[in-house]
Structures are given as structure tokens and as C-alpha cells.
Length: 360
Image (tube, rainbow, N blue to C red; front, top):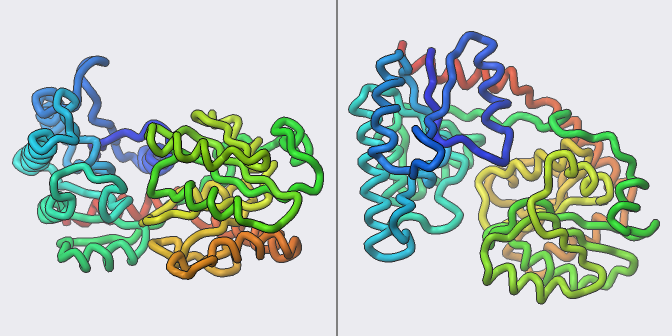
């Protein structure tokens, strides 16, 4: 089997963790990339590569993030721009099918977290109508697609694998807290990752500022590309008990923040699948999460789950995490063990088998 992949993620190692075991099994995997470093993401750039790889025998086109199909020459936020982007998206997918590829989409999200096309539901319907196989990380995703009248021809539920052992993890708690300026006895909450509105960091800040607990800190580590949101968060993060380490956190520094923290808080407004929770588990940390999307399926023994529609629920769970250190330790230990059960070798094999069935 030969698989052509689009698009290549730059920050999350998920794809290579999936494809490396597949390559070991003899699967040929390559990424669709620009012909030149300066090439924009547009159809004339991709057509020669789509033809080239098809002639070389690549039979599967595995798409992860369809929103990467943008026209950089046009302002996508305008009425005309959104339609140009959408038509380009339709033409790209149709070209893939006309060339004879088996189209496989991994539905990391039911819909984009931020609007991309003039109608994102219609865009998803078109993608799924062409897809020979749709992969999701839990059955919840297919339930939500069905609610939007989007029903794939063929499906497979394949979870995300563990991040255990992927990143450096050898710093002590004492050393990490020293680096971040945290004192002994300061219970520390952590949010780490790219900051977008749907991730609810503003909710976290508002909730933390209302906590009556003493000797607690909140660390926010990550960059925020949205100027308006960044300005709002800066105002909310003015408390001396909030430490915002703004900017991208290198892989070898992730351990500093996780080792220093007591619990990770991920107050998403909407989510399908979150690798952020699995990343926290890999560093032996439990999470405070809303019971939505795939997060709702996580066992209660490894996470503090709350109903986001219930007033004060996030605050209650954050306090609960800080009030019982024994339970916190139990949940954290169980979370790491839970994540270890998701082997990338098994996940790669499941993915390979699901794709192979398209040719049976």
C-alpha cells in the first residue's frame, strides 16, 4: 500500500507516531508538499504532485485537516474570499477522486473550531460524500456528524495513541518549580498549548480569579495568535498568582511545566478529540475537563469531569482537585497507566487494515 498524506502537522507528532509503524510494516507513506518553499497552497501547485504520486502507485489519499486548503492570495474573511476558498476546496477534493485515489478522512473535529468556509457544514458534507472511509477517534464523532445529516459510507473508530515517553521527562518537581519561581505549598493549575477562543482560557482565568483557595497559582503556557483575545487575556491575567509564559513552548521544555503543576485544566468550549489530555497523562498528570466530545468518554478514575452548563461546576472541580491530594495522586497515576494502553503499533495496524479493506 502507498499512502499520500495531507496536510503535514507542524506541532503535534501524531502523524509520524502513526505512520512510522506503518512504514515498518512495509507501507509507503509520503506527504503532499509544496513544489518550492515559497509555493502557496493552491490547486495549480498540487495538481502535478497529485498526478506524479498517482502514477507511482499511491492509491490512498489520507486527509487530516481539510482547512489547510486555503488560498493565501485572497482574504478568506470576506464574502468573495470565503467562496473562493470553498470552490478551491471542492475542486481539490474532486481532483483527488478523479485521479482514482481512495479518499480517507480522519475526523479530528466534527467542524472547524473557527469558521473557514461560508458554510462549514456543507463543506463537511461534501468531503464525507466523496470519502471512501472516515476515521474517528471515538463513536461520539459519528453521532455528532449524524446530527448534521452527515453519514459516511464506511467508518472506523481508531483512538489516538499514547504520548508516553515521546518527550523528555527527567526533571524533578523541585527543579521545575524553582525554574518557574513557584514556592513550596503553592497548589498549581496548568493550561498548556496554543490559545484559541474555543479552548476557554478566558473561562479558566475568570474562574481562577474567583477561587477562595489560598496558596494557589495558575500557569498559562502557550502563544495566542488572536490579538483581541490576547489583549483580553492579558487584562484577566494581571493577578500576581497568574503566570503567563507567552509563546511557543519547545518540546524539551514541556516537562518543566508539567512537572511543576499539580493538575492540568482544559476548559474547552467545544471539542471532539483532545491530544492535550493525553499529553498531560503522559507526564503523570490528571486533568479537569468538561464532559463533552470524546472527553466525556474518559473514565472518572483518571479525570475530574464537570458539566459546562452547570454554574460553578468548573470552580467546584478545581477546588476538589486541590482539596484531596490522595485522590489527585490516584487519578494522576491511573491516567498515565490508561494512556499506556494505547499502543501506536496497534493503532497503526488498525489504520492499515481499515485502509486495506478499501481494495478488497
